[in-house]
Figure 1 (cartoon, rainbow, N blue to C red):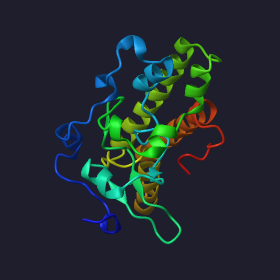
Figure 2: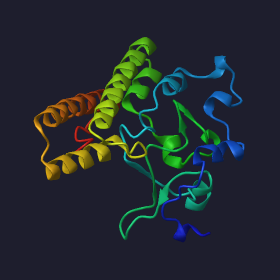
Figure 3: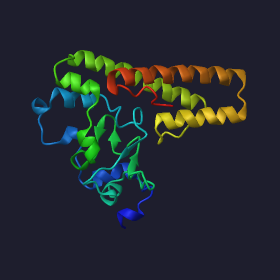
Figure 4: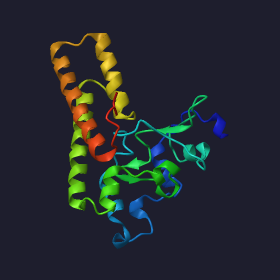
Length: 211
């Protein structure tokens, strides 16, 4: 199979592919607990850049091979004429807050650092404060997921922004009753709150995450 033919790879038991290939998550790397940096510790408690809360997809970069990543289970899609190949989020290698393919993760994953991580690693924000922010963000993610489910959306393999937009369009077409409309209003507020903390703490300038 060539990279040119990769469209959307979703093998059976794809969450187990990386384990079968012997890829280690960060928690099983060669580092001891004392060697794990405060930044890595924060990442192990977070996972928002992997679980579909911040990104809907991640572009592949020079040195990334779509075929190899697809074999690891990632849902790789080729781009159009002006768009690069990418893999969809939530990432199938994301396990809780750990990466099943950490040693073989794509280039963007290796390079990306959110603003919260930079501030914490640079000593401008205490680890305890950073963890509190992560906890608040995760609570907001959980609320959005719950409300989406309450509104009949079960597409958990899609990014939250994609799920929100699809739900909005579905309800607009169907003409929701008052209770459903009230629930959607609650979802809209929850999405706004999640977008707010992402833009302020994790990814400045990205206030239209779910737009």
